[in-house]
Length: 103
Image 1 (cartoon, one colour):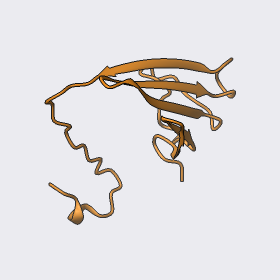
Image 2 (tube, rainbow, N blue to C red; image 1 turned 135 degrees about the vertical axis):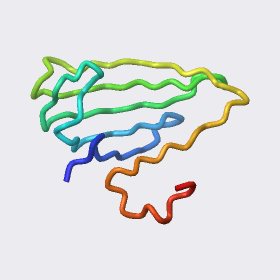
Image 3 (cartoon, helix red, strand yellow; image 1 turned 90 degrees about the horizontal axis):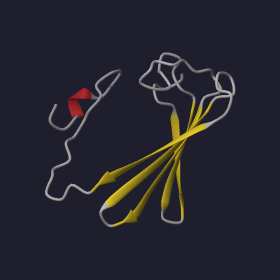
Protein backbone atom coordinates (compact mmCIF):
# COMPACT_ATOMS: atom_id res chain seq x y z
CA UNK A 1 0.00 0.00 0.00
CA UNK A 2 1.39 3.37 -1.01
CA UNK A 3 1.50 6.08 1.66
CA UNK A 4 0.18 9.63 1.21
CA UNK A 5 3.62 11.22 1.37
CA UNK A 6 5.66 8.17 0.46
CA UNK A 7 7.75 5.70 2.38
CA UNK A 8 10.58 7.67 3.98
CA UNK A 9 14.09 6.46 4.76
CA UNK A 10 16.45 8.84 6.54
CA UNK A 11 20.21 8.86 6.89
CA UNK A 12 22.89 11.29 8.01
CA UNK A 13 25.47 12.72 5.61
CA UNK A 14 27.75 14.58 7.99
CA UNK A 15 25.58 17.20 9.70
CA UNK A 16 22.79 16.94 7.09
CA UNK A 17 19.71 14.75 7.52
CA UNK A 18 18.73 13.25 4.15
CA UNK A 19 15.20 11.88 3.78
CA UNK A 20 14.58 9.74 0.68
CA UNK A 21 10.90 9.19 -0.21
CA UNK A 22 9.27 6.75 -2.66
CA UNK A 23 5.90 4.98 -2.97
CA UNK A 24 3.45 7.89 -2.88
CA UNK A 25 -0.34 7.51 -2.87
CA UNK A 26 -1.73 8.28 -6.34
CA UNK A 27 -4.07 10.92 -4.86
CA UNK A 28 -1.31 13.17 -3.47
CA UNK A 29 -0.26 16.21 -5.52
CA UNK A 30 3.31 17.17 -6.36
CA UNK A 31 2.71 20.84 -5.45
CA UNK A 32 0.02 23.30 -4.31
CA UNK A 33 -0.94 23.71 -7.99
CA UNK A 34 -2.36 20.15 -7.89
CA UNK A 35 0.02 18.77 -10.51
CA UNK A 36 -0.20 14.98 -10.81
CA UNK A 37 2.66 12.49 -10.59
CA UNK A 38 3.46 9.01 -11.82
CA UNK A 39 4.52 5.90 -9.90
CA UNK A 40 8.12 7.03 -10.55
CA UNK A 41 7.89 10.03 -8.16
CA UNK A 42 11.01 10.32 -5.99
CA UNK A 43 11.59 13.11 -3.45
CA UNK A 44 14.83 13.81 -1.59
CA UNK A 45 14.82 16.27 1.33
CA UNK A 46 18.03 17.58 2.90
CA UNK A 47 17.85 19.30 6.30
CA UNK A 48 20.84 21.25 7.64
CA UNK A 49 21.69 24.02 10.10
CA UNK A 50 23.90 26.59 8.35
CA UNK A 51 24.12 28.42 11.70
CA UNK A 52 22.47 28.40 15.13
CA UNK A 53 19.52 30.56 14.09
CA UNK A 54 18.44 28.82 10.87
CA UNK A 55 17.16 25.49 9.51
CA UNK A 56 17.63 24.97 5.79
CA UNK A 57 15.59 22.51 3.71
CA UNK A 58 16.53 21.60 0.14
CA UNK A 59 13.99 19.45 -1.73
CA UNK A 60 14.58 17.70 -5.06
CA UNK A 61 11.58 16.27 -6.92
CA UNK A 62 12.21 13.70 -9.66
CA UNK A 63 9.49 12.04 -11.72
CA UNK A 64 10.59 10.94 -15.19
CA UNK A 65 6.99 9.86 -15.83
CA UNK A 66 5.71 13.48 -15.89
CA UNK A 67 8.67 15.88 -15.44
CA UNK A 68 11.18 16.73 -18.15
CA UNK A 69 13.88 17.17 -15.50
CA UNK A 70 14.16 17.18 -11.69
CA UNK A 71 13.46 20.44 -9.87
CA UNK A 72 14.83 21.66 -6.58
CA UNK A 73 13.64 24.29 -4.16
CA UNK A 74 15.16 25.67 -0.98
CA UNK A 75 13.63 27.18 2.14
CA UNK A 76 15.23 28.61 5.25
CA UNK A 77 13.40 28.86 8.58
CA UNK A 78 14.44 31.33 11.27
CA UNK A 79 14.77 30.22 14.87
CA UNK A 80 11.68 31.30 16.79
CA UNK A 81 13.17 31.55 20.28
CA UNK A 82 10.55 31.34 23.00
CA UNK A 83 7.89 29.82 20.73
CA UNK A 84 6.24 26.49 21.50
CA UNK A 85 6.07 23.72 18.91
CA UNK A 86 2.50 22.49 18.56
CA UNK A 87 1.74 18.81 18.25
CA UNK A 88 -0.13 17.66 15.14
CA UNK A 89 -1.80 14.28 15.03
CA UNK A 90 -3.22 12.84 11.83
CA UNK A 91 -6.06 10.53 12.85
CA UNK A 92 -6.72 9.22 9.33
CA UNK A 93 -6.38 5.43 9.35
CA UNK A 94 -4.95 5.55 12.89
CA UNK A 95 -5.58 2.19 14.52
CA UNK A 96 -4.43 3.16 18.03
CA UNK A 97 -6.50 6.25 18.89
CA UNK A 98 -7.06 5.17 22.54
CA UNK A 99 -3.33 5.55 23.22
CA UNK A 100 -2.88 8.98 21.59
CA UNK A 101 -1.64 11.67 23.96
CA UNK A 102 -4.16 14.47 24.30
CA UNK A 103 -6.76 12.54 22.25
